[in-house]
Length: 170
Image (tube, rainbow, N blue to C red; front, side):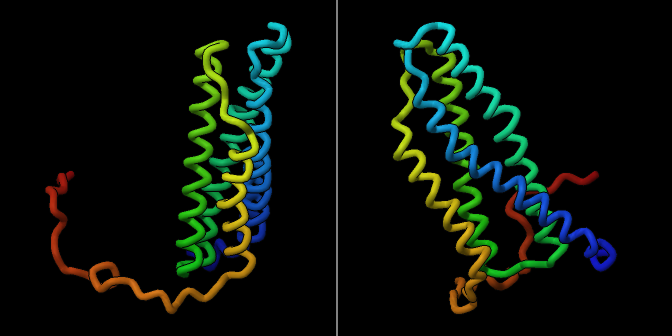
């Protein structure tokens, strides 16, 4: 089955790279946009800034994140890429997802506490999100051989034990 789907790999990869590029750009741009939430500006300008940040998060950043994660998951199985560098990359993708959720939290707090909540300064946020983005790019382009990393036996060998909880039957 996987062999017949291998013709889709270039298309899924193009979708993944496109979605990831837009998602990363939005992860960098949204902290800069949040910095424009200043209660001292006129109401019309505040409304415009609020609407643009909300629309960017809701209709651009989040759908691109979902598409990037889903297409990336498909690529893992289509390419059968179960290698150590990929699992390290997934740790950094998890950091990007956590940052995405944190930005959503900041956006909601700014919107619901008008004039009372100030977003954090944008530069530490931008530099902070650049770490996992650059780590993902580095791992994908370098594909380092991390085979020398030794995992403990309890992680690398089957234990032949049942789960510590009851599994419901169907």
